[in-house]
Length: 554
Image (tube, rainbow, N blue to C red; front, side, top):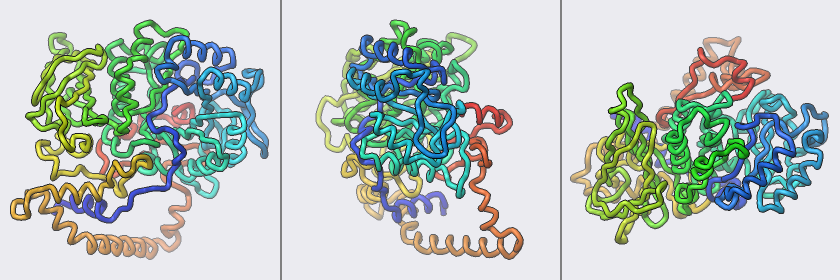
């Protein structure tokens, strides 16, 4: 019997969806705005902020949805007292953060600030560990709307876990009574997608998109790959965050315009927050138009609130898709390939309706989202040429109403693993246990257990069940005994470990804190782990990642 199948069914049958989360009406769709780090690092001041905010408005970016203006590292003092809240740098911000917040609010923008769940921020400014209540209170008093919370220099009083440190700030923010969007930036090292809805509104799934000023194409696709397979954890009120946009100078200087278009379309589809990281004063016209692409932004902000994911892959050719409100689909055909012979750089890619949960005989109107024009009616499939490192971003809209089209999810069938996606009523892709249920629209997004029951109910009669379904039915009958047996084995192992090493029992081995942490900083290299049922979670190569790199800016 397939042990993975048994584990999946046990998870689906016994888990209870999470409900306790930050349900304060924020992040119903992914947040959009601007962040200072990619362009300026910690070298920020009030003059730059006011100039950039004016450009955000005059350029039409604010009207397009980019309304958060987030100060990253460097806005506050280098040190702080043992008591009292964090203080802003009055030399860099002579008017003060409260006055800046009032000014931004008068312009229709929102203010974000930055802190860290450690003893210092990544740029070695004062941080909030142990001062959560004081800092949250003063943030609320200043009129702050967004908090990015980083994970550098994480000390371990009372052996606090990553989650506990972020929960401490969550509780402090909630206690203020002011709705403040909480952005968790712990780089994906503790699998925050598994608990993010209970703690924050967004959670980073990756390292920083670039460890240098300029991002490379490899940086972009690495962060995309790290977020693949995680769409099921996102939803209204909480989103996977693949880091800021590298469109424009300086971050996007190493990217071609084609690569920037691909980057933007894919970030929009997976419903990552859209936070501009460029120097707004240096944006080229084509970069500004790209960031204002109305129909791409509409995919990111679609009210159905289902994140897109990779649904097909063959070599360098991939299909990413997301369901939209009303039964439509957003699809990105993505050509990652580049060859020494230019004649192989472009490639004809075919989208089959089965990849996106459509019946083969369904007629749909296909629209090019970047060109903002209809391509015509298609049935069953379409084939289009996609350039190397490029995308074709599409919207598929059925020409007639078909019941059930809006229930498809990109994680219900994975052709990469399953081969044939023609029958979505049987196969349920592995779901980590316990599954995550978003707080918003919970009634519209059934739990994994309910989906499994519905899938089995919609399958063929018992006499004609396929092998996978038969295994699942049998596994449900055996799951209770297997769980008890597993628990018994774990207890026996615990007993044996303590008997073999009386001087160093298991409890004392764990007392030093989680693996990968030191007493002064947090190393994501050692701490990144693979969840047994989450695919393709990459781990950085320890041989290529130095302690200095981690401490400097991870």
